[in-house]
Amino acid sequence: MRYLSPKADLTFKKVFGEHPDLIISFLNALLPFEKPEEEITQVEYLNPELVPQTPFHKDSIVDVRCKDQQGRQFIVEMQMMWTSAYKQRVLFNASKAYVSQLDKGKDYELLQPVYSLNLVNDTFSESKGYYHDFKIVEETETKEVIEGLRFIFIELPKFTPDNYKGKRMQVLWLRYLTEINEKTRQAPKELMENPEINKAVTQLEESAFSKEQLRGYDHFWDVVSTAKMQISSSRREGREEGEKIGIEKGKKIGIEEGKKIGIEEGEKKKVMDIAKKMKEEGVSIALIEKCSGLTPKEINAL
Image (cartoon, rainbow, N blue to C red; front, top):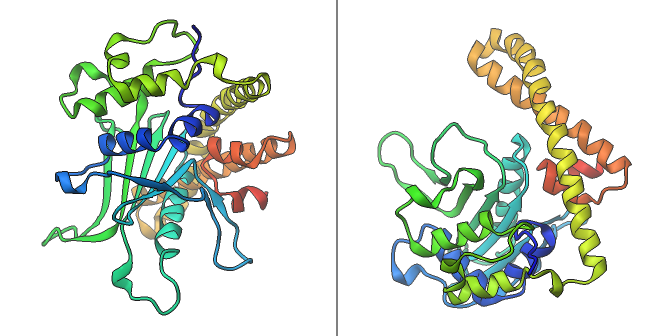
C-alpha cells in the first residue's frame, strides 16, 4: 500500500474539503475551544473563493471554508512555506470573511466569529512551542478581548507527540499530518484504531487517484521543492539587504525597529522576485500563492 502526503493541495482538500465528519473532528481537536458547548456538531461548506464586494478588487481562494451550527466561519489553510507576506494574507482573508457576513442595513450584532486555522509546514518563530493562538486583546491593563477574529498558526516541524500532553485527538491529527507520506507502507496502529483518522488515512491511498491527479501531485511537490530552495536563499539575501534599509530608517525610528522593518521589506522583495519567475514559467497562481504567501492580487500585479 502506498500513500500520498496529506499536506499536498490535492489530498488536503480531498480529506478536509469533502468530508464534513473529518473537518468537524479536525477543527474540534485543533481550535482552542474551552467549553463543550463551543464544539462544532455540524458544518456547511462555503465557497473557498472569497469574492470581493466590488469588481475592482481581486478575489482570493483558501483551502477549506465552512460554517457551523452557530454561524461561526472557519478558514483552514495548509501553507508549505513561511514568508512575512503570509501573515498579511491570513489577516486579509479572515477579515474579508468577517465583513462579508453583513448585508447593507443589517445589525453588527449579527456578525459571528471567524476562526483562521493555519497549518504551516515550516518554522517561523523562535518559540519552542508549535501552537500559536492570536486574538485582539487589550495589552496593558484589562486584557479584555475584542471577539470576532481568531488566528491559530501551527508550526508542523516543531510538533513531537512524545512531549505533548494535550488533547488526544489533537495529537492524533497532527501525527496524521506529520507522519503519513509517500514512504509510509503501513500506517501506525494508534492512528488506524481511531475511526476518523482511519478514514482520513484511507483517502490518501494512491489507488484512489487518477493518473492525471498523480501527475499534478508530483508537479506540486516539484514546484514546492524548487521554491523552498530559492526562498531559503532569498531569506539570507533579504536579511542582508533589509538590514541596510533598516539602519537607514533606524535613524528616524530606532536602529532595532528599523532593522526589523527593513528585513521584512527585503525578504518580501526577494520573495516577489521568485514569484515573478514562477509566474513566467507558467506555475499556477494558486500554487505560487501557496509557496510565497503573497495574495493573488500581488501575484497578478507582478
